[in-house]
Length: 175
Image 1 (cartoon, rainbow, N blue to C red):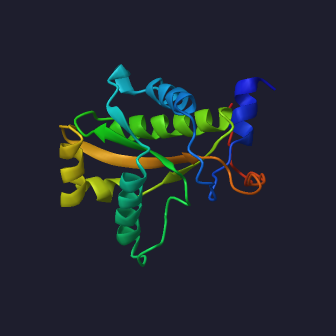
Image 2: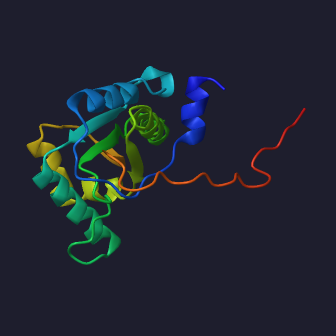
């Protein structure tokens, strides 16, 4: 099995992280992988916002928890110290797919760096809200972007998740 296939087959979503921040080099490599995701007609509609500031990370977590209807103190980011937010330009007809491919690359690259990751939803709701739009403006981000997802990244707390069998009838061949 090639090294690429080994990473694809062994990657799992991690839902328990230590508070140890990945290194700048690890995050840079993960982000670089995201920028090389395939996009429709190479429009490169997505952007990645790397959040390593604990106060901002906690604020985003609280916003996400409110959207879920959870009580104060619930952390939908599972304790991960770094959050890579993927947004995509709504003007591109393939923006959702483009952003989804970026998310996939980020998660595979995190696994390649020996880190855990997980796709956390509700980015669309966060950044369509007045609070989310104000954050984008504060960060100097202009345009009509939709939140695709949060890729939470960090060092794995506990055991790496076990493999689960693939479902029956996952693939159909038409010859």
